[in-house]
Length: 391
View (cartoon, rainbow, N blue to C red):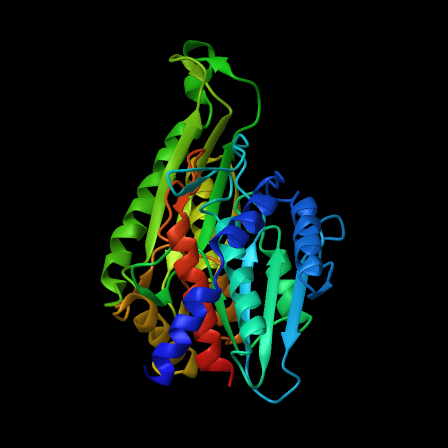
C-alpha cells in the first residue's frame, strides 16, 4: 500500500458517521430562521468546546446573533484552510431531525447544518490524526445568509475583522462540479403609486395615472433589458439576466388602484460593476415615473457579487486530489448556479472559495434530506483537502 492510499484509508476509518450525525442533530434541533440563529451558534459552541476546540464569538455586525469562529493551529508555518457555513434557515415551518433508511431529514439537513456537521467532523479527523504538519484550520459559522431576510452582513464583517483563511470550503448542496465562476445577484423590489384613493373606473378612475399601465411599461423595459443581456453570455458562467417573478395590483376589475408591486432578480457576470447595474435599474425606474406620472420607488438588494476563481491555485489542486482519492475521479469545472458566501470571499477579499457539499435535496422546502453517506464523503474530502493544502 502506498503512502497516499494509506492516508486515505486512515481518513476513511477516522470519520465517524455516528459522531457526525450527533453533531448534525445537535445543530438541527435548534430552530434558527434567518436573523435568529444565535441559539444555534450557542449550541455549536457547546459542541466544539466539548471536543476540546477553542471558540470565539465575534458580533460581526449583529450583537443579538453573534457569529462563531473556531481556530485550530499546528503552531507551525503553513496555510490556513477555512470551513465556512451559515446556521440560519429559510422561514418555513420547522421540521425536527430524524434518520430513516440512511437519510437525514429535517430543517437544515440540506441547507446547511448537515454540511457544517461534516466540516466539524473533518476538523476532528485532521486534528486527531495529525494530518497536517503546518498551518491550521478555521471554522466560521454565522447568521444573516438567507435572502431576503438576511443581508450577508456577518460574512462581510467577519472578513473585515480578519476571520479568513488562505482558501475556503463551503459545504452547500453542490457536488456535481467544481464551480469556478458565478454570477452576481440582486433582488429587485418595486412599488409604483399614485396620489389619491382607489376609485371606480367611470367615476374618475380613467383620468388617474394608471399604475398597472406603468407597471406593464416597467415589465416591458425589463424584458427588453433581458433580451439585450443575451449577447453578454459567458462560456463558463452563462448569461446575465433580468427576471420578473411576481407582480400584484388592484382589487376589482373596474377600480383604478393606487399601488402596483413587482419583484424579481438581476444577475450579472464577473467583471461587471454592481454599482453600474444598480444605476441602470434606477434610471429605468425614473424613466417609467416620468412617462406615467406615477411615483416609482425601488430597492436594489445586493445579495452577492460575481466571482471567478484563478485558473491555477493550490486549493484547486488539493481539492481535486482529495476528490479523486475519495470518489476515484475529479470533478468537472463549471458554473455555480446560485450565489452563496463563496462569492463574497472571492469578490470582497480575493480569497479562493470552493462550494462543495453533499448531494442533498429539498433546500428551501420543508422536505430537506441528505444521505448520511454523502455527509461522510464530504468530511473525508474536506479532511484530505486540508492534508494536501495546509502543509
